[in-house]
Image (cartoon, rainbow, N blue to C red; front, top):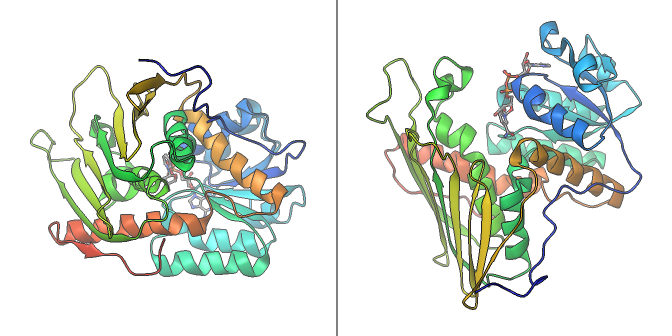
Length: 356
Ligand SMILES: NC(=O)c1ccc[n+]([C@@H]2O[C@H](COP(=O)([O-])OP(=O)(O)OC[C@H]3O[C@@H](n4cnc5c(N)ncnc54)[C@H](O)[C@@H]3O)[C@@H](O)[C@H]2O)c1
């Protein structure tokens, strides 16, 4: 049975503050910036004042292709440009903390790629520095604005599913593309670098719950070639103190013509079923009725516009962004606990207190 038109409408699209288009400066112009940051900023008419990368070849062609106004040879040049208000740091995490700090010291708001930091102490120090400087520090958890996930988040926030009891995610994908890339060198890649988006959206959907323990296991799939270093298969379980739970299962070796990341949210009043990043859809079930949402756009690149748009809106409205580093701290803590658990063969790891 279908729902009455207009019932449980949500606006899942990226949002920008009216009339305010602050200049963006990009630090680290690698694969993801060319594949998603710049296409997203172009699509939504955001102004990229300039870009800098330690490898000059990385910024080649970005002016012609994406309308980036300037290329800076040095970081200082970018940071001293008064037309830049937001610095978008898109290097790998091990290079990122000092760059974020330098940008904050230069008086810029920062959007940092994920994983936000390699450890919680560094993450907290960066948050403290942003607070001290009166600047906004947000994390580029662009999955939060993937159309299907954003729709689900808004339904959860509006109480449409009641209390969230369980969240379940499945990756119906293959990680064979990591062979020969830098990602194959990342310890627990499937958990630490990839799943962090799924653990972050779990964090959003269990808002207000206290996480008790995290368990994880990663393993080589039977078909994984010897030269592929990082395990393709993994499972992470997040247990909240009140019994609510979440599960991420990464099959990692799927051969299918319909790649997708199906998910389920089971609540006391309703359920959400969907898929993001392939075979996108979202469906709400409530009171025996169903509604399927029309989704425009996709995680790549629209989610990236959503993450930047939220930071811009927060700056304009003088408030904490939804994707603030502070809000992302629990996602990072869950991810790091999952890596620790995998190191210990799946033993439960208790989350430190005080994170909600
Ligand atoms: N959905 C997503 O949000 C998503 C997807 C893919 C990658 N990522 C993340 O984005 C980050 C970068 O990934 P990538 O695939 O673009 O990597 P990449 O290696 O292609 O790009 C990183 C770039 O940073 C540059 N760099 C390194 N140190 C620098 C410094 N000190 N100053 C300026 N530039 C510097 C490198 O030269 C390189 O061009 C990673 O943290 C990764 O996890 C996010």
